Amino acid sequence: MAIDRVITSESKNEAEENFNVSLRPKQLRECIGQQKVIDKLKIAIEAAKKRNEPLEHILFYGPPGLGKTTLANVVANEMGANIRCTSGPALTKQGDLMGLLSNINTGDTLFIDEIHRLSTPVEEFMYPAMEEFRVDFTVDSGLHAKTINFPLKRFTLIGATTRAGLLSAPMRSRFGMLYHLEFYNTADLTLILKRSAKLLQLNCDEGTLNLIATRSRGTPRIANRLLKRVRDYAQVKGQGELTTAIVESSLKMEQIDGLGLDELDRSFLRALAGVYEGGPAGIEAIAATLGEERDTLEDVVEPYLLQLGFVRRTNRGREITKQACEHLGLKYSKKPTADDGPELFDSGQP
Image (tube, rainbow, N blue to C red; front, side, top):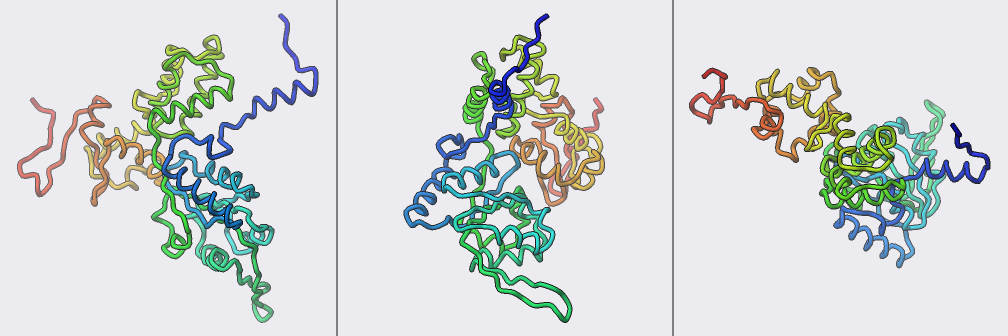
């Protein structure tokens, strides 16, 4: 059997380019969804260009996978600026940040992901940099310590966070533009998948991309991830094209149900329904039961379950809803409260 081989550097580079294709949009006109945010960014960018000055500092916040990093890169591209990327946990001391700030040119963009995880000393070091474009940097220590007032060039800080509530009020107030990214609807996700399928040179039957979109939890990152997994399945189990049967079989193998819930989501709901009898239960207790980190449950699992109405947050903890029990085929029982009056708990007895 003949084996295809790459025999020229030109064809090899072309193959690598196709393999490493990025699905992220590069310009605002390529962005799909989040229309309110896009419209506001267009106005801010156009106004800044007319004034020939950098943008104000921007904060993007919302659940993971909705495009905060992508929008940061798009904004930098639209402004024709260089972008330097880092994350909150990577900036452990003032010197780490000083190394970035001292190399920034006028109009450049500094992107800090997970900005809510900045340490207090680093965050306070940022305040004069954001407001006055200068920093007071201390060198040496003890008797030889001295503070140097270091001027900075005007730059744009773009922060991204999944936990806007953990940002301190002084830090949040220093951002000129704050944009909340919401979950995408199925129509927008389908358009995103059509664009991704085109970039991946993937042939799809009518309705297959919509099927993937309905199970993507309103999140483009998940939609593109599922598209790549379905593509792999189609190439191994099918003819390389997406059909309804191929998509259904692939998603079943990935343990993604009709509403987009994965095994971790279902484990969360089963623990709440079974171990904690429907709740209320504290998030720490549920995390310990599942052997997962609390942050994973709060940032990845809960937002979508709350959106579906499968979980309620109360001042006493999390509670499962009747809709969730019906979806999982579990018996719904509600613990009595002081306001419920008669016993509402379903013992399961006839």
